[in-house]
Image 1 (tube, rainbow, N blue to C red):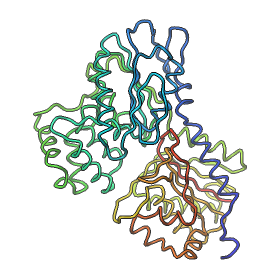
Image 2 (image 1 turned 90 degrees about the vertical axis):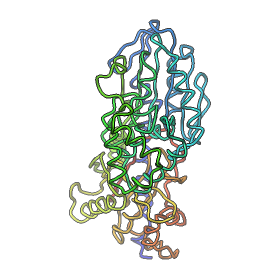
Image 3 (image 1 turned 30 degrees about the vertical axis):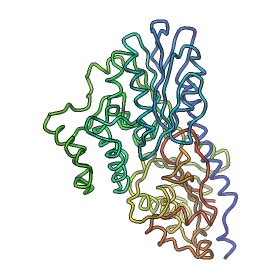
Image 4 (image 1 turned 180 degrees about the vertical axis):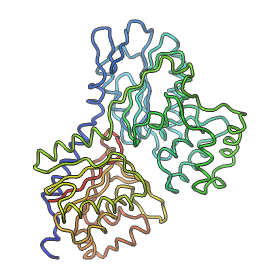
Length: 447
C-alpha cells in the first residue's frame, strides 16, 4: 500500500475529538441546567416562571434515550419536591434514580416493557389533577419506547408496522405520523390524559427542523398530521396491503370520522402547556466547530438538515471533500466541514449495520485514493441501527485496506452489511450509549 494511502492518524484523532466535543455540548444534564433554574420557591423554565407552592404534587414522566440523565438533572434540581415519576428509556441507557422509576424497553421496535412503563406513566399523569405539575422529559427514541396502543391495536400490530416502515426507507416524520394514529400517548395524547394538570415539557430534539410535534411523536403538543396523511404514507411506500388489517381498519375509521382525530392547536388541553427545547443538533455542530477551530482547522457548518438515502447523501459530502481538496472551496484546507441530520436506509439485504455505517461505506467508495481526507458519520446516541457502533470512519485508503482483507465494498453495500465491512478494519465508531440523542453528525476533515 502506498504511504499516502495509510490512515492519517492525526486527522482521524482530531475527527474523534471534534465529534466528542459535539456530544459534550448536548449532555442531557447540562442541557437541563442551562434552561431550568430553581430559586427558592420559583421554577424557571426558559422565560416561564412557576410558583412551586401553588402545586399540590410534582411528578416527572417521560421517554427517550436521554431520559435517565434528564431525570437525574431534575432530581438534583427539585430533590424531595418530586413526589413520583416514571421514565422509559432504551435497554442499556438506564441508571439508578432516587425518586423516578426507570423502565428500560425496546427500540426501535417496541416491546412489552415499553407498554408497562407507559401504563405506569399514564396512571401518574391522570391522577395529577388540576393541582398537579407534570414535568415531561422528551428525547429521541421516545416514540418507540412509550407504547400505549390505541383501541383495537395490539403490540404485535405496532411491531409489524414499525418493521415495515424501517425497511421501506420512510423518514422519521413519516414514521411518527403513522405512530401517532395508532397510539393513546402520541400526537398530543399524553397532554390530553394529563389535563387539567399544568404540563411542562423539556425536549431534546432528534428530528430535522426541531419540530415539536415530530420529536418522540409529539405526545404533549398539538398534532399537525391526520389519518389521511398516515394512509397516504403507507400507500406511498407500497405497504398499505402489508400492514395488519387492524391498522387499515383504524385508519379508515379515522377518515370516515368514526373515531376522533389527534388533538390540534387550540384544543383546551394545551392551555396550561409549556414546551422548552433544551438541546438540538445545531448546538452539537456549533460546539464541534469551536473544537475544530481550536485544533487549527477552518470550520464550517454546512447544514443541520441532511436527509435522504444514506448512500446518496454520502456521495454529496464526498464531493464537497474532493472540492476542498482540489480547489479550496468552500473553504481552504486544513478544513473541517460539519453537517447534521438523519438519513434513511432502504433495506435490500440481510446484513448488519445502520444509516451512519452505510453513509461511511458509500463515502469511502466516493473518496477512494483521495489523500488527507477523512469522513466520519456518527449517531449522537451511540447506537447506529441495531448495532453496538455509533457509526464509522473512512478515508481515501479505506478501500485499499479493505481489498487486502478480501472485503468487497459493493457487496457489503448491496447486502446492507456495512458493520462487517468496517469491523475487521477497526474503523467502527464505538462510543457506547452516550445518554443523549440529537440526530447524527457527519464530518469531512481535509488535512
